[in-house]
Length: 334
View 1 (cartoon, rainbow, N blue to C red):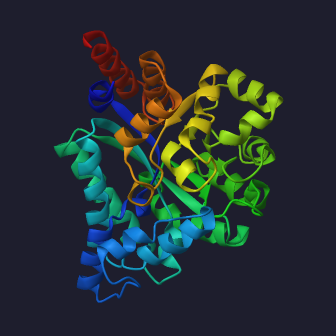
View 2 (view 1 turned 120 degrees about the vertical axis):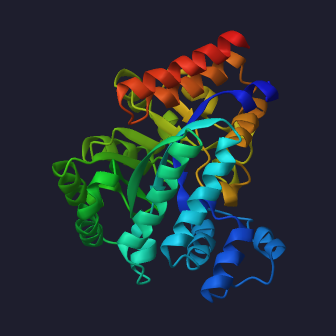
């Protein structure tokens, strides 16, 4: 099973590019930019990755992002991630970035998006990895701030397929961002939203009804609401689940308690993703392997998770169908 998972073609749909900043690269970029890091060594950084909840993670996450100042920094971070997932046979990525994390520090929006996009273009040419970019609003900030960020993004809308919602969930319902998402849809952006990770199932309802989300990021708490599960199944709304992240942030005490198997058993379009892999102990293969072992997933269930992800992409049909065929051919050969 481990060998099968490692070679299986995959798509990643829930990945915060700032969350791929490994401590070694964090120190390297910090040194060249003259930015000090509140840790003495790489080992000390890794020892700090003992989170008790989402907020304790975000405190370190935002501190790490402070080293990112120049276009080359964003390129290097993105390229390092792409090389890692290429080795894990990830064939398509749809990555999140948080412009407010950087623009609020004085880093121009153009610097951020250009560095990320350049690395993705190189990955398409050199590694055969296709991609899409999704811009996320920070939900602990105001709806007005989200609208202002959307205005900054408009000159680069040809590079961005959609908008999302991330950061601290509890106390910041999707309804807080209705105006920003309405405007984004008017501008042609697709919409996704984090909901039902630490927040209640009601947040998933709001993401669907008020933000018109095409995908729900996380969504694992939907199992607490039978009516919601029925709706997600009937409308075939994808859930971008992040197993290691959920355990690391104590959404579940252990992998054996995770709801992923229940989502599959309910016929939902669940997928596996890595979220912030530098902080949560694993990229795509590690997440698939941990979920498979912890939940005793069958080979067919593992393949279903991979197929769901390809079907849930924002790709044009020809590329999506080619990737699905690649997966089917791999399964048939295995």
